[in-house]
Image: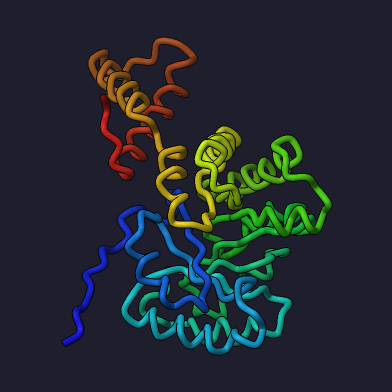
Length: 281
């Protein structure tokens, strides 16, 4: 008799998810291990990870797996001949958490995908080009847009930009501002290819200082490092707890101009610490 594995559901909401693990859709043997991982969200990739000749089989495998499991799916961009079949295949699947739309370059790409999926499935717009960055604020305002993500590798290929922090600060910041204008959660940073955990932690921390709140990941081993870097620290949680306790004890009286910003920060830290299981020291 075949033993059925009990796989726990994702426990962190997609709006605040830190780690988004990309899983090659042709590697069906890795689907369950990815789902059991510490990733906040997993994304089955039927776009760049899959050769055009293998896309029909990959779609079928993803659809079959999503009958009993839940995940996001990265679909091909609107301009390709693969987009239509991708959307038709995943539409209505019980385990479809949402779609990540590759190479989004206009608000229409989002709304057409959203409408074709039935008007209820969230669309995470992956922005990977100079045009996409230029149109980011309109994309963020598009009906159906759930969150923005940065396809940093393709962006560098499109623009010739280097990978250093200074060069990448501009497109990242554009996505942060666009997300705010569209009233979306913070954007998701592109992946860090290095397996050096110190480098991975540094890059993740830098992204959070710019206002990004998640990161695409290519390896299960990266997940604990990124989750830790993006989460509030126990010291942060302690400060937030103590500030809020003091604020309540003084009758929620505002003493000076710094109180409201500090209150907002404390409330945000408390909410995230609770969601991520971070305990005060």
